[in-house]
Amino acid sequence: MEAGTENLVEALARLSLFADLTHPQLEVLAHSFDEEVFAEGQRVIRQNMPGSGFYVILEGEAKVVIDGVERARLSPGDFVGEISILTDELPIADVVAVTMLRCLAIPNTELKAFMLGQPAVMYRMLQTEARRLRAASIWER
Amino acid sequence: MGALSERPFPPGAYDVVVIGTGPGGLQTAYSLAKGGVECAVLSRDPAPGGMFRRFPVFQRLISWTKPDAPVERGTREYEAYDHNSLLGEERDHRALAPEFMDRAFDLPARHEMESALAEFAARGGVQARYDCEWLATRRTDEGFVLETADGEYSCRVCVFALGATERWTPPIPGLDAAPHYADTLTPESYAGKRVFVIGKRNSGFELGQGLLPWARQLVLASPRRVDTAVLAFSPLRLRYLQPFDEYVRGGSGSYVVDVSIERVERNADGYRIHATGTTWDGKLVFDSDEVIVATGFRAPLRDLPALGVATVSDGRLPAQTPYWESVSVPGIYFAGNVTQASPGLRKHGSSSSSSSVNGFRYNARVLAEHIAEKHFGRDRKRPELRRDDVVPYLLSELAHAPELRIQKGYLARVVSVDETQGIRDDGIVPLADFVDRAGPDACAAAVEYDGGGAIVPVVYVRRGGRLSEHVLPPHPMHAFDTDAHRSELEARVAPLLG
Image 1 (cartoon, each protein chain N blue to C red):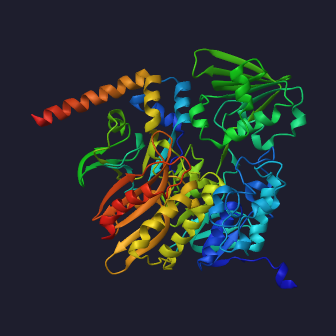
Image 2: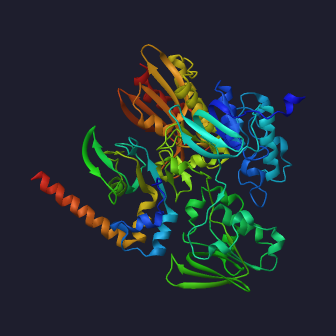
């Protein structure tokens, strides 16, 4: 199969994060933000470096690395980068492409307007954050 | 006289093959030659100039060249005032765009730009085999074989400077019936007509502006809202925003609407367009005498995707590493306008200038140096610096280097420190590569937009494998070489320099 021939709107439509969006809304999303493709080993988010974005993985695999130690793996549908944007703090981890990685990239400066404009997406993001929080709490017990 | 009319670069084996003779191809070929790398240049066109042999449709660029500027024409610093000339190593090859401008505008006309590019090729000695179209590509153990109309070329490295020249049309039913931007007729052909333009990016607005004196009614339509905050940083605002301005003020016959186009029907009177609102609820049906599809272009990648070259933007552009190499097929590089698909760090969402000549001319020069070093073992010039010269040198670069001023947050000046080699000027490199690559102790100077849109100097210090970032203060005149900057920079790099 040729690499990356899938239509961006179709790719977005498959993700549960965007399941509530209509086709015209998906088109706006695809027209408003860029796809980025990272080679294996490239960093998507950089620990302690400001100014990054919100990334939704469309294709491929990434790892979360804190101080050089791998902490998690990410796959299509997962998203990263929102915490540091929402808290206005530096990212606490590197996110590194493990395979060739295709993402939708929303710049940090545009995430707030995007979330307020799409409350259904924001709700699904919150659900994911809630699950992450619960998993983290269980870990610490 | 036979030798003069003989076409250069017959089929055969070359170290590098460059495809394309637009500004990206010309700059790459010129810089490779200056770095001592043998390359064949092939072009399907009959002459140099690339897209500027035909576009923009309304014959005026949107990037400025100031024939007179605060600094002397032909100097390195002048490049920041001349966004259209290619980069020459000799005075004679530099600042050619202003030589052809009639100064009706500070934006060159298409034909002026084309002449300047042809002059660069002539004076700079950039030869090419014209009318030689690249047709297909295959991989070999040593590199690649490019099949062309004239025969086969083998090479270790290819640089594709193809431009985004192939029409791209979204999959909307009925859209095939409407002409593309590239097929726009003369403006007077639209006199008294209702014109529906699909697309609200550069080409859509260019058409809208150009047709204002002619069309009876003008509609610009696409899903995305025109974002005035984004426009504030867009070259579009220089020339094309009158249709938007008229619409915002109301009632002029110009409309800029946010819709997703469902289908386009051709009928005896013209076209009927069915659309659904994107930033508002509802549907609209438009009747129009003409439809023009201004949804942009794609790079004519031919069989490269089948070879494994990954793409972005619905297959329109090749996905690239910070050094403009295919992320999936090593040895295939890109130059010119398509290098916009190597986005760099995009800190605070800011994008590079790689989609236009002013930005990608630097990418091409950095690429040529990179190819010479990585693939052909040519050591790059790394002049030694004295300890006390480092801070003044970096300050001067922050204040004056056109590479840093134009490719903000994208290209950086790097100085490295090594026990055996001393302090070295490592040249201009992609900032993303510096930030992500492990290496010796070093610092990189860049000019960037900060989160609030102010232009600031930034220095990155890598010491013992750890990277730190330091944003220096902005300055109303962008004078980043004040005493305050000097003392802060000194404090930041002192631990590195010892």
